[in-house]
Length: 178
Image 1 (cartoon, rainbow, N blue to C red):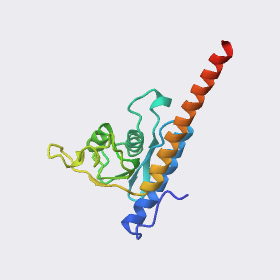
Image 2 (image 1 turned 120 degrees about the horizontal axis):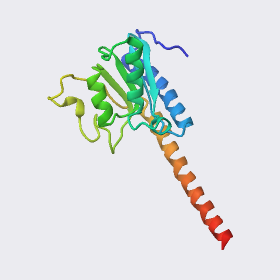
Image 3 (image 1 turned 60 degrees about the vertical axis):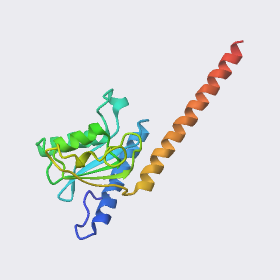
Image 4 (image 1 turned 90 degrees about the horizontal axis):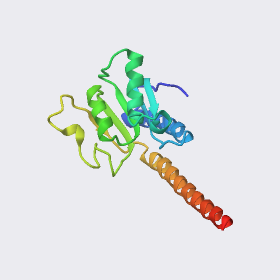
């Protein structure tokens, strides 16, 4: 797949194109048994950074998709600031990631599914609209939200079923030893 899109498309088409790329990264997280969240950073119509959730794999609680993508982008452009860049992420950012977005000076965040428990762009608060911040971030949500939500729901349904099977197996083993 190409890593760029014709800039003559509408903003919603461009956002959907890049979000589809982030969803592909979320599938990589899922393949590693991580919560399926993917993120990319785009600048001037090109991916400059990408990442997916990997806190379990890396033993790093800060290894959220957004943080991974921001770190990758900063390394690739050799700058800790990413003005004019857009971050695409499949799930509404949490407070840690929102802080990193502000500190890296990302211009715009586009996310797929909302995160009712810990999302801070719209669900639990409107973090980017706080006047104390020294950088303002534009945000848009709901891009390919159904696909992102389905990916997450399917993952958690599988995890619940897996836990249930393990419990049943443990009970069966206990029953065999009695």
